[in-house]
Amino acid sequence: MSKYRSSALVKVKERTRQPHYLWRGIGCVMMIVIPAMSIAAGVMTIDIALEQGYTIPYQLLGRPELPAIFYRSSGLMTIFGPIARINNFYAYAAASFIYMTLMGGVLSFVYALIYRLVGPSTYGPLDAPRPNVKVKTYKR
Image 1 (tube, one colour):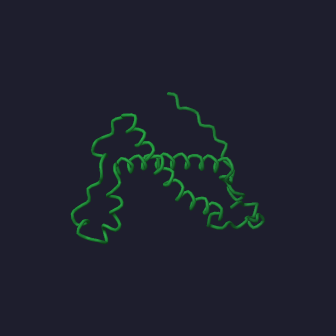
Image 2: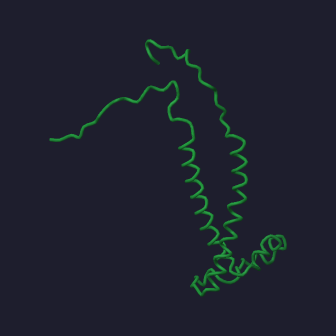
Image 3: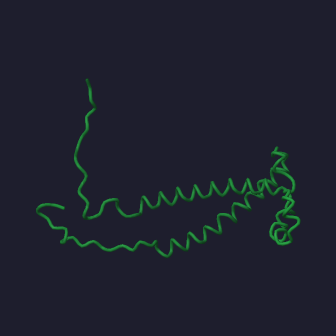
């Protein structure tokens, strides 16, 4: 607060703490679109890699083996039975995870870049101006 200027003269517009409804909608759509795209890309990548003869670790290939308790429980087999029938499931899951991480990182970087260019300024009307201090290197 300054000695000769009152902060009551400057009216600051109150901002809501919630994000704009459009950003919430885009985030909700991205939570569905990014995993779906990454799963599709992972399945296509593994299928093409197997057709082309690329080496994939043998631990990722084949059908997943579930614990014995899963096979004794009808409820767990109802949930995990379809997963146990997918051939090369671990390879698909690993490739999908890699694609999901890459897509999320790229979209976060693009969002941060756009927000930096279009977003509000760092300083508001009540902030003090930056000091004009020039630092010289110390030479002995």
